[in-house]
Image (cartoon, rainbow, N blue to C red):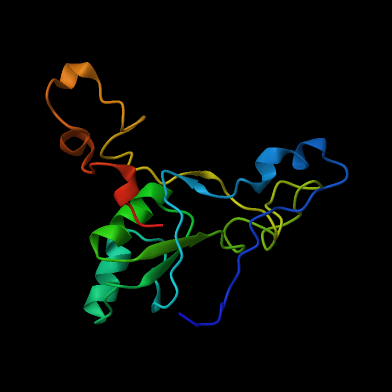
Length: 164
């Protein structure tokens, strides 16, 4: 329990003086929808490229398991919810998704507000819902499904079971 904190992510984007929309309450909401909060005090880190099935298969073939690990993946190639689902199905404890500046950011060109690319302090926001299993609000199953549960329809009984 006395493990030192190795990394503390900055969960707030910088305020841009020339952009009034950058200084609103929502700028500090840097989380993924349907993802629980969590703290992992000690676990191995495994890089899984884009978090696609073929990326995890390459790890498996190389003898690398993500069971009990924190998986690091980059945005792109597939929906972020699939990245989390793929890691969770393989026993990961948590997933860190980052924007690779080589793909989406300041290494591509001029950054916002002077250009279209994400600045180094920018974050992505969105859901990590398992949309391929159940789009929309999974806790409000449509009555047309009769007696089926959210687990029957969406593959999870509640989003509190998901990994952070």
